[in-house]
Length: 258
Image (cartoon, rainbow, N blue to C red; front, side, top):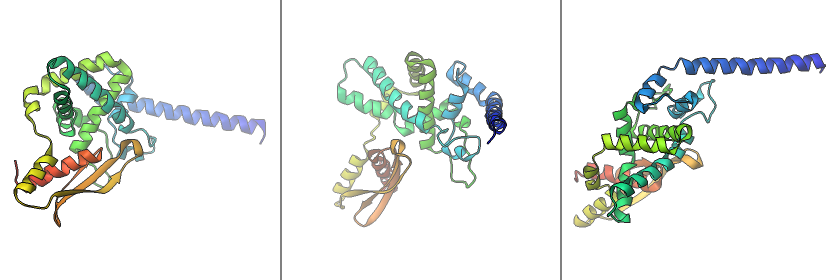
């Protein structure tokens, strides 16, 4: 290959990369969601591409303009940890006389999927989700809405730092959660199902993982619960324990147990 050919080849590669950059830049600048997101956050996002990634479901990464890692999943992983820390600090300040057991249980209720899903809806984040549903298989489920709340927390943490993230989470919880009601919620569905089975002289509930999906750092488990030979419910979650609790809750609904 002559030096002229090598030069032209390198020039064309750089030109292609530059054009791709311009197309992405144009895509980002035309995204109307950023204005809506600014109103939700109370500030203008300093890194538009990061916040767009925080709102992008993996189904959209099949499009040519995205890489496979351009979805919210990595951010969700970080956001989960940040939210755990902030929730713990908030409770530590709010309940100076409560013991570790109370704080742990209340934090679990603050960061559980249903709570975060409701917060996404209340804030209007739900309408900003980007997904490609060519086969009708993607829906704005509670799990997805909880995921994008966590990924949004990660984006705020990365761009604005811990202090701003803490104040954002504190404001959201103060405005949208009733802590008195939250502390009264019984979310140990496995225990309730076990007590029901024992009281009615039934076989003890058994839980079985029937499916696992996703990469190692972000797996989703599907569990079914059976009593005797009959399957009473199934559930999904980011851990086996969460999936078992969801399966038990569905079983209690079928059994019409409060």
